[in-house]
Structure formats: structure tokens, C-alpha cells
Image 1 (cartoon, helix red, strand yellow):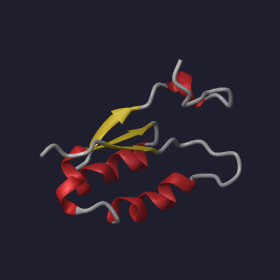
Image 2: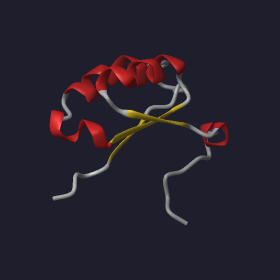
Image 3: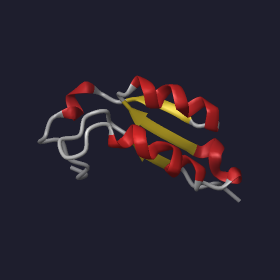
Length: 77
């Protein structure tokens, strides 16, 4: 049986609640069951979050800086 791939988007910038992803990352990481941790990818441009990722056994994907604009979307083209 294949494991699901879990992607956690955790960018550094936030207009409404600065650094919210850094503050919420631990909570998010802790609710993922152990059997799924090897299939988690965290996409981030935040060095603080990137440093925490390895402690949970997740993989880091460095977020492209061009996605940090207010016009960035998750919409599939």
C-alpha cells in the first residue's frame, strides 16, 4: 500500500500574522502520524522552519522566491 504524499506550504511572509507559519509549524508537524512522516514535504523560504523540518523526518523543498508575491496562487494552470 502506498503512502500519501503530504505537502506543507510554510512561507516566511505573512501580512496578517507575521511569522505565523513558524509559530504553527510544530503543531502541524505533531499531528501527522508517524507512519506518514517519511512522505511529508515542506516547501518553505523560512530558515527557521527549514531547520525544524529534519527533527520530524520531513523533506525540505526550498520555495521559489518568485512565489512570495501577493499575486501568487495555488491554482493549477
